[in-house]
Image (cartoon, rainbow, N blue to C red; front, side, top):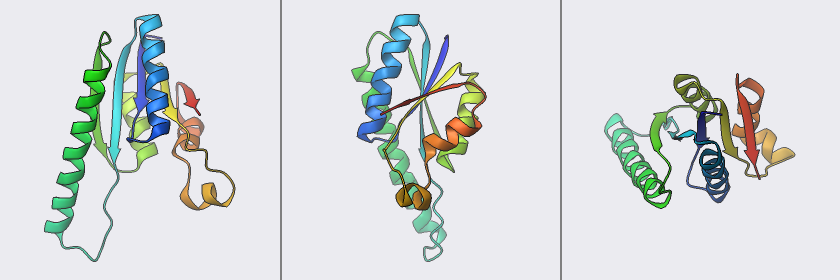
Amino acid sequence: MKRILVAHDGSKSSDKALKKAVEIADKFGSTLTVVAVIPELFLTELVEADRTRIFETLKSETLDMLDRIKTRTSGIKIKTVIRQGSPALEILNAAAAVKADVIVTGSHGRHGAEKFLLGSVSSKIVDHATCAVLVVK
């Protein structure tokens, strides 16, 4: 396991996934890429300037989050990537781009109607990944 990609969205479950990915990277001497995805803004009520301003704010917050991750995980080389789009698709694309051996992602623990209505990023990743996937609860 030389290349690990971990998905991080700022949630507690993604913090758990990051912790596990760091443990694995440390144990195997792996490189670690942390990917954060900013979802597309399909708010038709907003003019383009407002959508751009919202995106720039989200991007700035995401950069801050990734910088904090880098500072608190010393001793391991971490690369960070920000993408925009469908979270599952962009995580899979990022994994392909870095030729990840494993994708580590958190699980929000949704099930039943909530999972059906909201979808599950981790489920989509498991279903479509071309490498191993570790889902951390």
